[in-house]
Image (cartoon, rainbow, N blue to C red; front, top):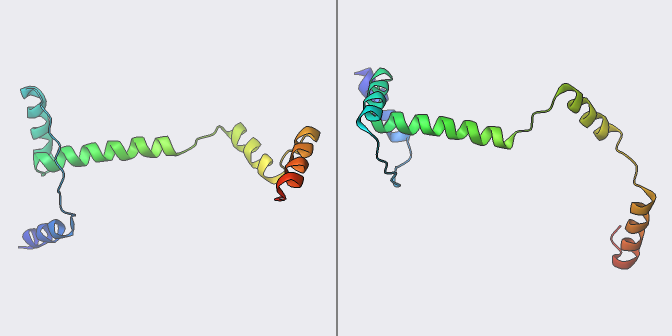
Length: 104
């Protein structure tokens, strides 16, 4: 009975699925997906959705993260603690901008 109660609780906590995805697969692909879903003790829909979501989250996470080599990391940290000085031309441009717009 514990399995039924925990399953019911998990279903109640899951957000309502109101959107639909449709795809066509060949019989061999479907058979492999069904076999994998059985191994994971999931419905085919839950297996495909959880697998696709896991991969999507991995890709999005990879896209949103920045990975630097050790050398680049050290250079980045050094630039944070000791930023480069403005060039004289940039300093002049900033001063002109401040005089013109009064925001420096």
